[in-house]
Image (cartoon, rainbow, N blue to C red; front, top):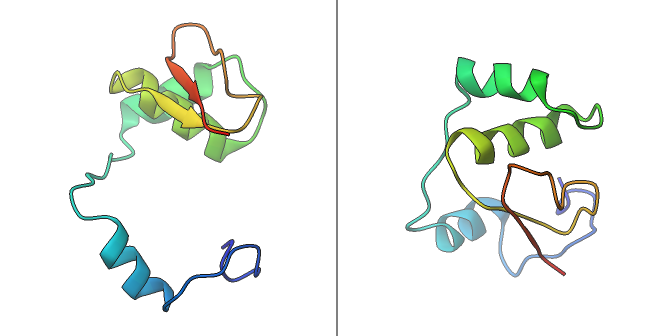
Length: 82
């Protein structure tokens, strides 16, 4: 979306960039458990942020973000990315 909105530029087309940039990464599935945790979070209403935070919580991951609203979520480990 950022590429499409021209907020970032890539040296190649998006699909090629994605294939080059993500080897070794694993996808986290959106499970019923994560959806339920997202609903129960005490967090602003943005569903994408809720799913990211809930995924980190359920899978015991560290959420890396530059979004100040997501840093310091209590039981969810976060790391600032600035």
